[in-house]
Image (cartoon, rainbow, N blue to C red; front, side, top):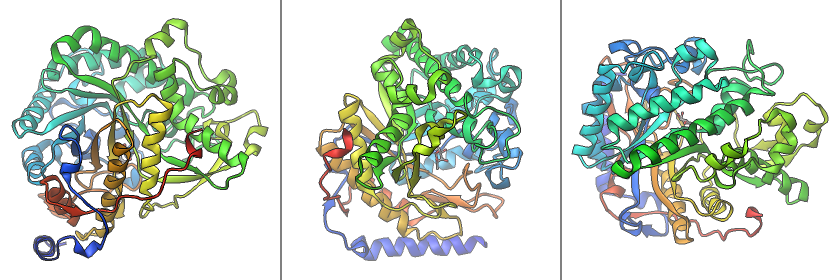
Length: 509
Ligand code: FCB
């Protein structure tokens, strides 16, 4: 599409915002940035492979995500160039400043920093992340760093099977050590794994994310290697051990000097029973045990939930007493990625066979998302209930909502009214949850740009900014949502729907 088309559209948006304001949404309640505590942070985010490009430049080596994308998944797209964030970061940080971001969430590409997976540090990689962090801080934007966003160096996958091997724990901790040592004087918020639960499920059960392992009949792809019945449990176990060791390292070696905090991130749906039968209500609890409890029970209570252990039997590894002690309490905050609410129906048939994957172990059917996902239904009360559930069940941990946002087909429109409505509603839900005592500390819109998406490649986007892929310069254009978010962050009062629905008593039992 020609450049001037977007310029005109961008101008039109400014006019729309200037003249009509937000009356167009015709909503009831009003609140502004000021209604949130001053220390609560609002930001947006990306991840390394999804934006950086420069895939083999300045010494970077491939990660499992490069390999996955180059095998044709991600709708045949790859991150060789992506948004060219590696070269355009100065311009991008300027856009973050224009938008009024208070924090920015991004990940460090392990294979850019340590191309052999362990050992020597790549000076060019170091320089890139140092410049990036320094520039954010110079503009008053807090860096929130994820250490692993599905991009283990491919060399370690090839050498010993990546996360399937316990060797990955040692290499991950050594990588984290380099990050803390080099960047920890400026970075205060560290997340070990992005969506640790989905990493295990997508990567090793259904094959729908890197490294794309699965076994028939469980995969969503053609499974050429893997074991969906055992591997997800094994890698999840290694994630927990790697996470706990990383936190211990930070607490023992860095915390007293750097004062930062380390957490882990999980994909967190809200689940509602499809009917109010006892079976569906119990199945809903099981869904929570599998998605959240699988990681949070060990982190808060020292062991996997009984329901998960019962279904998985001897396929789920056990923690030694020492490991359990080490994992319990090993997080300063929980990061959650929340997009929508799903409806859960009991499906006991799944348990009738002995050869089961994790999904069969859950013994449920869920509905609420249609594939391909074109837009998420807007159910903000789901986020409010989720935050309340975390408060009730897991001792009200500090929470960062690391990802929340609306997907749309990437058809060139900058007029993303559905995204504005979605953000309106979900930020309102966060405020309601805070008023109900949730310990939520921050909120990040996914994503700052339209970028490479695992599901849909470049055909779908969540961005506040559109990136014109037909333009050699990969010019960025603010969508309506970018203007809206900027207005909100700059303290202009906006009309926002605060969900009025009363919380049900039954959901947290
Ligand atoms: C999450 C990922 C993120 C992004 C969104 C849409 O699962 O963490 O990288 O692709 O989904």
